[in-house]
Each structure stands twice: as C-alpha cells, then as structure tokens.
Image (cartoon, rainbow, N blue to C red; front, side):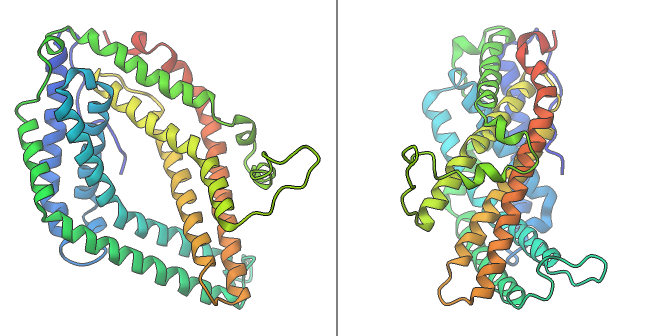
Length: 356
C-alpha cells in the first residue's frame, strides 16, 4: 500500500495553529478508526495482524505522521505533552511493527532460499540439490515462526493494556483539542516554513554524507571486503575479528542509510503539513525500506548460522543466503543513488517550492 498523504493542502492564509490542528486532527481520526480493527485482528491468531492490512497500515501511517509532526514542529506544542506523546507513539510503532516485520522477513528469506535452491532444468539455482538447503530452510522457518509467535504474544499483552488505552485517550483528545503554545499558534502559516526547511536541510545533509562512491555501482562488494580494515595500521595485518565485530561493522555501515530514511520521513510529513508534495520522496522511502528489510534479513541469517551443532552444509547455505541479502542492500543503495539526484533540486529551495 502506498504511503500517500492523507490531507489536502491548507491555504497559506491560515494560522500555524489551524494548519497543525487540522493535520493532526485528521491523523488522530485515522488512528482511532484503525485501532479497533487492528486490535481485533491481532487478537484472533498469530499472523492475523497483516491480514487486516488496511487497518494495520492506516494505524502505522497515522502513528508515524503524528510523531513526525510533533518532532519537526516541537516548538508549537506544549513540551511535556509532545515528549510524552512521542514516547508513547514510538512504543506503539515498535510494538505493531514486530510481528508483520518477522512475517515479511520470512517471506523474503524463504523465497530467496527457494530461488537459490531451484532445481528447474532451465533455471537451476546455485544451491540446487545442495544437501544443506532443506535443513537451512527448516532452521530459518522455525526461528522466524518462534520469533513471530513471541511478538504476537507480546502484542496481545499490550494491546489491551492500560498504556494503550491511555494512548487512545490521548489521541481522542488530539482529534478535538491540540495543545498548542498560544503565541506560536496565532502566527501566520509562514512560521512553519523555517522548521520545514530545517527538516529538508537535515535530509540533504544526510544525503551528502552518504558513501556515494560505493553506491555508484550496483554491487559494492569490494567495499564490503574492507569494512573492518579501516583501523588497521598501514601495511599491518588487521587484528583477528569475532562474529560480533563483523556484526558491528555491518551495522555501522548501514547506519547512515537508516538515518537517512528517518530524516526522509520527517521531511515528507513536514511538507504534507505545509501542502507541499515532496515529489519523489515516497519512491525514495520505498527504496530505503527495501534496504532496511534486506539488512535486517541478513542479520537474522547471520544469527541463525551461529546455531550450535548445525552441519557445515547448513552453515554454508546460510552463508550464501546472507550474501544474497547483502547484495540486496547494495542494490538498494545503488537504486537510491540513481534516484536521489533527480529529487534534490526540489528540496534545495523548500520555501519557494511550497504552494503560495
């Protein structure tokens, strides 16, 4: 489902308070409409939350937008209320995202392994007939099913908790009475433009700091080979590494891209508040979502490969699947690099780009 804006542009003649209240009222209404459906579906059986895809997506979309607006335009809201709301929304976002996240990961990893182990005569995979493929598949499926079941249990415990009820009450109040700071609320809507420009500037700054040289090729394997050698003495031999060191190196390599996705979302939502379109940002968000899911999937495979007493053949297959997901990470970076230059001109002059 496309994560599209859910509000129409507001005339610039309105006040800051009217624009923010109108936007947040719409998002709070979407939250309250989607919550009962999402809670009801989640209470039926493990894996049921994504079955109500529309309700779950609407709920997550509203949570992200409210949290993003409270962050970007923080000066316009009561500070304590805004901080508490952001904390609770972040908690709910993490809670709701776990189970469907594990399901998407299972689809991704099992699909990749099945493709690699395909035995079709005209399109055999590199793992076709490999003795470790069935065991590797069973191991991944078992681990992901267990993780999804645990996430579902945690979800059930929290979805009927006092904490969620308190958040729902908070959103009910938000739908009718946004706690704005009085002087700021009365300002013309142009007062929102500096914060919007700051959100766009943060995204542009993060984009400039991305390792574009590595992303210039569809596969940056050479860079991956040298992730852990940066701290070695010139001409010296790098110190021996543990699996935890490898995990840390990959996490540090992914971090700038994950941060760019957070800033991209904030920029999108700020533009929505001001009636801007943020052309191209939704597509870029989708590319970075693919990057993050492939990165998370690779971590899952690496963890599974450290399961005690698995056979060398199983470990080998898991290694191939891990490499396949890291290839997906590199591919997403390349795609982002191809699209980013076309989006930048629309972000450089954010005030001029907003409707008048």
